[in-house]
Length: 72
Image 1 (tube, one colour):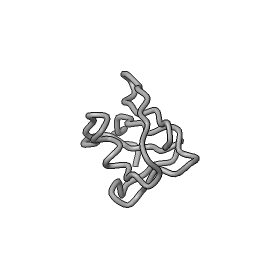
Image 2: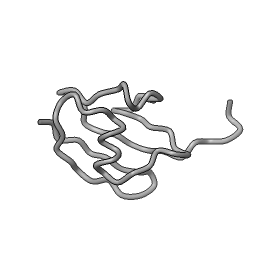
Image 3: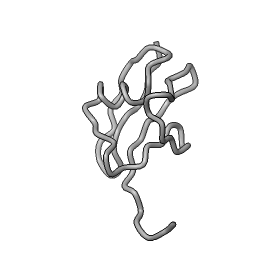
Image 4: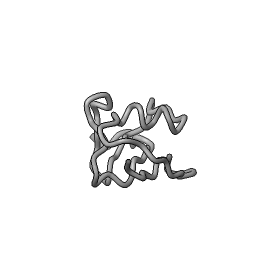
């Protein structure tokens, strides 16, 4: 089991305990969050394939941040 902080910036961050191997998509579902319109960052790294990225023993933070428009 891994304790992971999950949340939205700006906003609230909560802690959840999940099993290693849980997909990032499932972690967001457990937290009641929808990634639509947000960038997803796991420990500071941008993640795009939420179904195929998984929590491991080093995962500490899953954060949704607003996408910045116009800076492509």
